[in-house]
Length: 320
Image 1 (cartoon, rainbow, N blue to C red):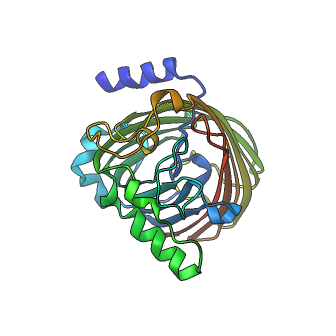
Image 2: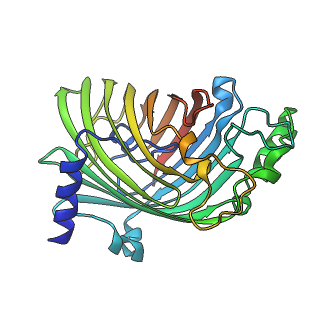
């Protein structure tokens, strides 16, 4: 009864909402219709020829029936009448101001920041209602313990690019506990050629608190992600697009951790843009047991003096 009340309240309060985040591994157009798979995701602003704001991220994801025994699942929503997938992932994200070669604080810009998290998640598919319920809990760390400095310095040394010197001014260590709920509904489908989905979600925690609204479309040779088992079509090739509008409550990568207030520099509450827009687009190739994706993203400025952020990325997955 309590879980049903949570879901009902979420859908009433947040109509047509899509969770906006830097790495989203649960969107319907990224679905792998198998209860066992592994997938690797990598983001970098190198794909857009920039080196600021959201600069890099990766996600290592595993879905398997044995994860049903994960004790964190007791905190996640997973209706018994749905087909449930159980997964965990390791996620790492990093952010920098424009002049990474400067060792001084760049006032008015975003601070250096990095975060690493272990995420437990469930994806529950209702094949009759053509819906998906997404639930996850992330636990981790923002700050030097997330080794953002070491990773970026190593990459720039290897590629001969500017060595970042400002990480000494990064957001200080603090705990990450973030809970997410999402809901996806297929609005329209034209056979196996075109689909339109609406989404609802909310994100609460010490890393970020936000809600977002949007739609997503897929066009090409597609199977429905709202099925319980693998379909007969082994080859899929399609493009997708997302348009997202977000309401921002809190962002620790800009404002610092909730508990540790000793960071040398953070953006003030008044600096944070409370409304942002994001456009994502990409292409997905699915073979019998292989998932391949390339995508690009554009996000409007996240703080008053900032600029739009652009990045791209790849995903490689395999059914186990």
